[in-house]
Length: 549
Image (cartoon, rainbow, N blue to C red):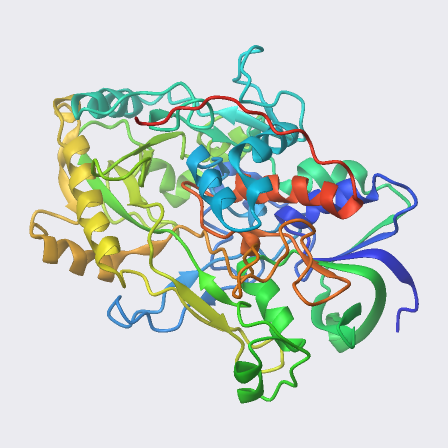
């Protein structure tokens, strides 16, 4: 039994949790506890700190929650694996280190919902700038931050295949852009990445480690939150377990859930907050009927379009086992293939003229490899990751018992709508058009995935159903808003109908953004910190951004 009372107990030491721990503990009068189910991000752990080693933590019980969806009804009944970081820093300690804000019109869409006016682009931009230190930005750039905690470098794009890629996209009729996080997202460019001097720069490294010395901040790893303690409609504490079955209880003036799109709705549900009919079915006594908990689940599905490379210039040989010691040694000096996350460039395009802003995202890699490290091409190859960005397919998450150790059951319903299917056909056609341009003539040994036998629209969809993988962007299961399915109050981040509990993570997004979601999550955390502390939010910045007329 822990008889201490904290001002704030943060459940989840992931991306948002690290940012909140920093901001809330800046006032020495605030006593803050962070509960993280995973282990510390030890400085000597090469698998999380070497950028190129990103494929090793995913799928490992030492770093990953190792979730899988329910059989997806429109994906041939496949269960789609979903890696989520179970370590200090959360998914920012195991992700691809890609930093993308999304399109400004994403936030205009947020702001158009009832009660969400303070979450439009003008209100979000100051927080994007507050959190970042973009070393590639010009001093006069009014879109980018220069002195925030999150250090980011721009992809080096030195491999000749990047040059061919940038030339090919122009041959295919697409523009270049100077910065996908700046004035104009649409187009192709080198990507920002959370890497500092060849080392992953996670949220833990940016926000938590610099302030862990604060006497009013306690970080407890290997602490699994099992239930919120409620008194009526008020959350007053958290039950959690430590290794060897040790049970603890801690009191809190405020509990802030930062577990992400899976863990936060799960903890609410096992604590009796959710759809009361669903809760009763699994033996949980309802505390508060809130039907939106676990609903509105969204994600990005993606595939790899791969080509053989006829010249020995790709990074595929670096995958050979015998080369790993040499790569590791070079990385000690922050040089060589180990210092790159590989996702150095890509872009955003519209697949048709009916959409107002880009609906497809490309990541280009001078290597043919999957997230799990397998290289189906063998020899030399290159690939693009491609997928629709704002699919209208929606899923849900429901607990299967009152025990948080039992993974929740969730289904994304990928490819469940006609629009989703059409965008997938357009996505593959767009990728093929780019990769078959003259700029690649000197390098291409032909398409190996999906291959020439996948030609018709139906064959493309069948291949996506068989080969599609998550881009690891689950979100929106505790959405902000004021409608009957909203879970979180956008002005306070409190759970509707409850006191003493807030949610701050990817689950509060009403719609998934156009791109990787790490940057939006950190923006939400920065803005939420001001709301929680009762500070005057940063003033909106009405800056013109690119829009099609």
